[in-house]
Image 1 (cartoon, one colour):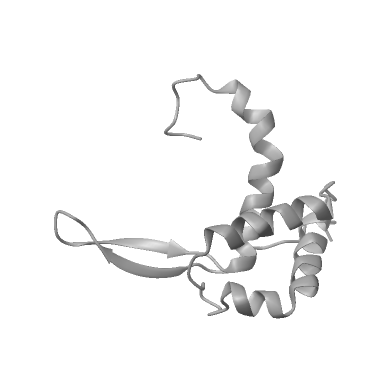
Image 2 (image 1 turned 135 degrees about the horizontal axis):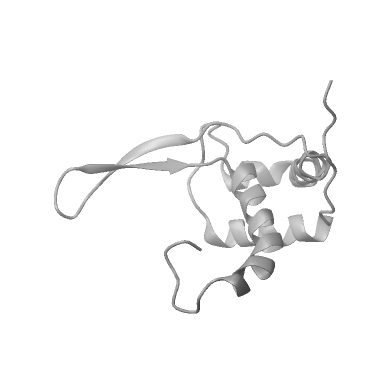
Length: 112
């Protein structure tokens, strides 16, 4: 049986990530949970996310797929993660971006 790795993720980082997701707003994911609904059990939701990410046992849920119109006609598919997964993605961004950003060329934008 494999054991999960533990990661040093502060609860403050999870809180900051949540604040950024909330400010960005956005639609509900596949679980149909809006930011307002996520806030109804905010402490529990953030604790559960922090606990799973810190223990290395976090697994992202499926992404809701919607089609949006293109300017040139036709449609393109857009993936909408759940609120909790957007918070998790933002946590990772907050943790790795300062370490990795300095490795990129200053004119490199496409792969950030």
